[in-house]
Structure formats: C-alpha cells, structure tokens
Image: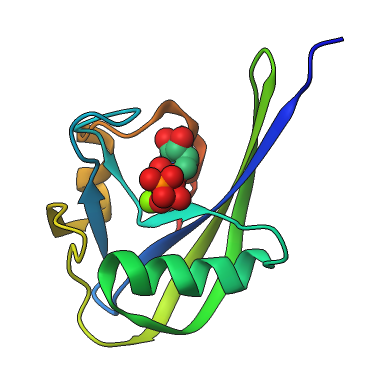
Length: 133
Ligand SMILES: Nc1nc2c([nH]c(=O)n2[C@@H]2O[C@H](COP(=O)(O)OP(=O)(O)OP(=O)(O)O)[C@@H](O)[C@H]2O)c(=O)[nH]1
Ligand SMILES: [Mg+2]
C-alpha cells in the first residue's frame, strides 16, 4: 500500500487597522515560484499550530505575534499527500513585517488580493476575507 504523507502548515494573514494585509512573494525554484502568499510554513513535530505560526512569522517577517485567531482550515488531498493549511488572522504584533528571508513583501488592500496570483488552496480564505467588513 502507498504511504500517505501529511503536511500541516501554519499561515498568518497579517492585517493592520486600515485592513491592509502583508503578503510575500515565493522565491524562484520552489513550488509555486513567483506566486504571492501569506507568510508561514510547515508545522514541525511536537509543535502546535499557533507555536509554529509565531516561529514562522518571526523567521520570515521578523514580527512577534501578540494575538492570532484561527480564521479557516483547508485540507487538500492529493494522491499520496494530505496538506492541511491553518490560516490565522494576525491583528496584534510587535515590529514591522519585512521579507526577512530575501523575499519581496508588500502591504495590499484586501480588494487587491483577487487580482494577484496565490496558490489555489488560498481561494476560499481570500473569499472569506473579502466578505469581512
Ligand atoms: N506560507 C504559505 N504556504 C502556502 C500558502 N498557500 C499554500 O497553498 N501554501 C503551501 O503550503 C506549503 C508549505 O509552505 P512553505 O513553503 O511556506 O513552507 P516552509 O516555510 O516551511 O518552507 P521550507 O520547507 O522551505 O522551510 C507549500 O506547499 C505552499 O505552497 C500560503 O498562503 N502561505
Ligand atoms: Mg514559508
């Protein structure tokens, strides 16, 4: 029987009081190269999703998360791989986010999200964001 691999990913939607969101661009030579994404990454063994979120956002954008709430979960089932994405809304943090690993980063209005290229797994969370006030 084929072995099924499972990856859990913690993702932060960093939203300021003006409802602007900080996004980063994926590096060349990786899966979905050049696509925009919300900062985040794989949850390690023995980590909870929110601990992984804080670690990834510090590593990738240098912010310290003060408060985050789970907005949506998305499970993607591929042939022999299950990817589970935990999308958090991050509205309180310390520091000014940047693309600390050399990735391009920018603040965008929510309404701009649908015109940018994100991985298809982000479609439903982007719809949720657009429906929020
Ligand atoms: N960070 C992030 N990953 C996403 C998003 N949407 C989405 O499908 N993913 C997928 O989640 C998976 C893991 O994310 P990642 O590549 O950021 O993982 P990571 O930071 O741990 O990278 P690394 O393995 O190079 O250390 C990738 O397959 C990526 O395509 C998103 O908005 N943000
Ligand atoms: Mg990452």
